[in-house]
Image 1: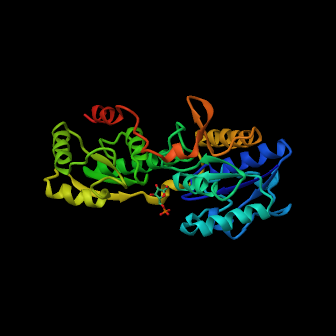
Image 2: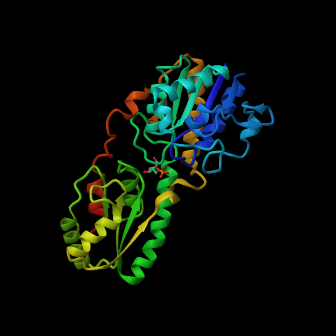
Image 3: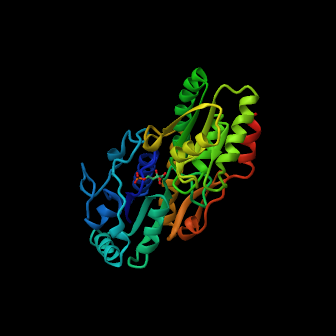
Length: 329
Ligand code: F6P
């Protein structure tokens, strides 16, 4: 068989590890892999990987020592033009001309929406691998990149805590996650933040100010509030303005972590997950599956229809907001 592989949307640490796994699983089974550069945009332009086997083909050597590297050697993109009937037709033609039998897109919900739309125009098999720091897809316990993004944010907050304690300040730290609070909540718990503001919960600035006053009276020298970029108060800067009007007992500072969370060498957890899912995606294709995401739940690899991974908002893990609150006293 000839498999195509691409990375699309926001990059995530572990995408390279997944790519390596796809290439090596395919090679060990006697299949070819065509690397498609720059996501769906590159697919529309037939922009293929150029390595020692010539244009297109990826050999096991072409993915040597990339497991530990952040980002993606294939590059990524966001491509609104792909999601039009014309764009999808151009992409389908490019896959047919390259003789691709099956496609493995590595990315998040936007990537999978694109893959579902492509299936209307292209008859090949599609198995997606979940690569996004947001952890907002249903059908897998974790997405590739989430563990690393949490670890990066926690490392930053540990440093912020030092200066917060020295100056007896409150820091509002904004993290990514788009419309989802998974990254914010896991970061807050792991970094011993006092409060997390997430899109899944109503964020009341007055109630937060009251809680902060309470924590001050308990002797807390510093406060860390982790704010998801998608929270309804409009992020850390807007919440900071509201807190200042609501009588906050600490001097405050805001920090936006932003794309820092998308970079860096993947954690061991992300490396293992990416390796398992890339291999499972290849084996699923060989077994004839299509229209699915390769995920992992409770330690087992599983296939989930691509549509189901983004059809509803993935809820936050139960009771963790309450847990954070109990830990903050
Ligand atoms: O989906 C991953 C993500 O990092 C989100 O958390 C964030 O909202 C978005 O991508 C940022 O996208 P861009 O890099 O295009 O600004």
